[in-house]
Image (cartoon, rainbow, N blue to C red; front, side, top):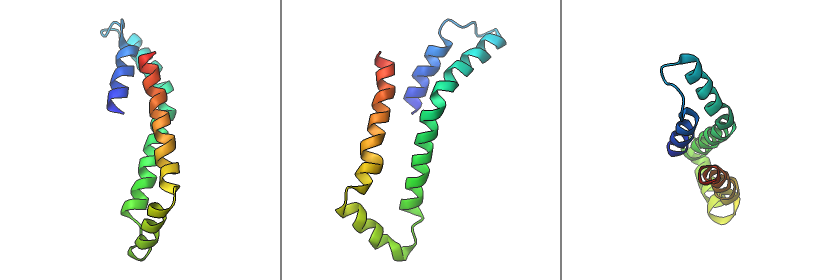
Length: 95
């Protein structure tokens, strides 16, 4: 995310007079608006996965591990959708 953010921030600030607070504020808003949905999804997913992996009660951990080890659940939740979203962001960089 930091690499993506650095790229898109650089694009937004390209050619902006950094001594002009109004122009900088407008550029930062132009940077932030399209990044917000992607960033929110990444943060939410990290939060949920953190809860699942680090806050599961001890009695339920074997069940959690069994589900993750023997079903495609985790792959569907994180493995399939997240790379697609990241690749969409990279396509914007490459495009």
